[in-house]
Length: 244
Image 1 (cartoon, rainbow, N blue to C red):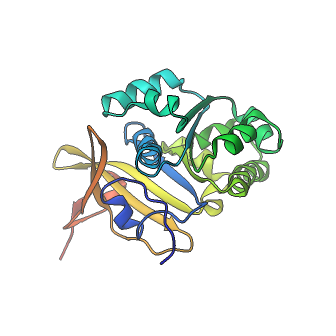
Image 2: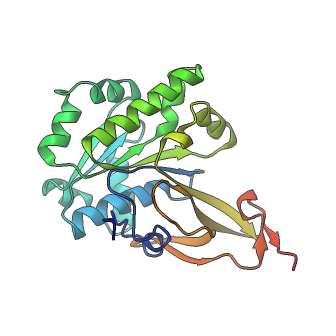
């Protein structure tokens, strides 16, 4: 059996045939409020607390204090993990991050080596679209990110915004072709109630569940439930009853 990097998210590891392949770069795409940050933090928290795997959170926009606050509301003490050297937080810019990946003695690369980083979350890939309007240059930027992380052997979650405008900008560089796996998180309206839907769109080199499943965000993190049954058009946001 191929070794897997477990997420620690109930239901998701089953969808992934046990977890991600080691060294994968995974695009986690969703609209605001779908739990991208929660999913990524849960991935890092599980690795640190259950497997003693050091993790790294890199943000281009949100300061660590707000991340700590959000995690505390879910029941996770990130400060304790930070003190134990099992979690590292870095606030930087897309330009500095790209340069750091290409500089062996940069603070980022030194941290990854010295701390033995095995898991990483990057928030977010959408920021790279602001560096260029050239789709070929953007694809090169994405390749630099993915190849640089693969070179270091980390399993990385790359967060991406999912509004229509953001999705179009992101796909200018065809990031979906470069990453190893894609998770889609969506809001869906069913009988006047907003629910959350998760789809594993792609896993390179591995089998995965093809159905769209419900999930909830609660204290303790994300829990993935059963597949939507008797519905079609789930990813449109306004599903309808399937015609038999």
